[in-house]
Image 1: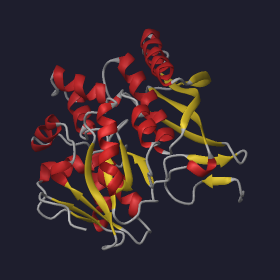
Image 2 (image 1 turned 90 degrees about the vertical axis):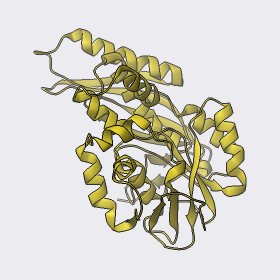
Image 3 (image 1 turned 90 degrees about the horizontal axis):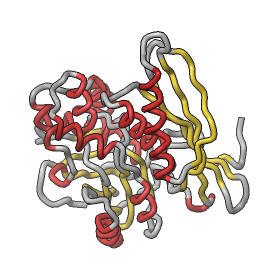
Image 4 (image 1 turned 120 degrees about the horizontal axis):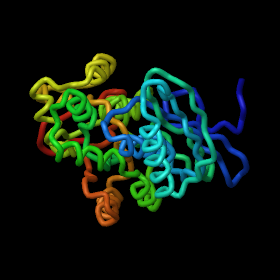
Length: 319
């Protein structure tokens, strides 16, 4: 079934669906939920909400409405845990200016929480993940490595400082980044989640006439994640991501621990923004001034190597 008002649908992987209501207004629709990745119930609720909202920000839109999605083991878990999760989610929605209008819960042996989110956008301002153009610079707004840290948390191998830093990053909204990038001629955007930095970067060039270069030394990374990866603390999702994307990627000269971090599945990661290089430094300065301190230019879209991603170990990026 087709519909001329469907701007972004299932024809290719993107962060959310977009449907035109009028010449001035379109809806952004997304849904995301998962099992706990941290021990603190309130923090889990905040992270899940920030993660669900991120898809709307990645499309260039403004989230407006949300519905809770809950699976909870009623017979085996204290209801106070669910209350803390929902309080965390509600507080994060309030911070984002999003109205919670309901939801649905089921009795489930495995705890799950997330949200369905609806956002607004002008139909002419929709950002997809594959609109990057050769010569564009790439800006990443959050450090990567939270999947590895979450794995360490489950194994009891993450210290309190590492946990606090990871939780602060995952629970941080991409709202400021989205608002700041709206001031610039952005060509494409995506958020870094379960497919890792490499996986989502590959989506930006897959099926296009463009290639991509990422300079590994410029990618913001949690140093604790690198250390943990060196000890073999790597989630299964990292290996799956690597296996799936290996045919598209050149990682010659990249250390094994860094490879694991580059493939690491993220939760509520940052935005990966593609825009003309002559505007990139201004946006970078704007992001950092606005409270996105880890934002960095990490690479570029190229006219060579169509459909291929090359990760350079160090040195200057060459077009």
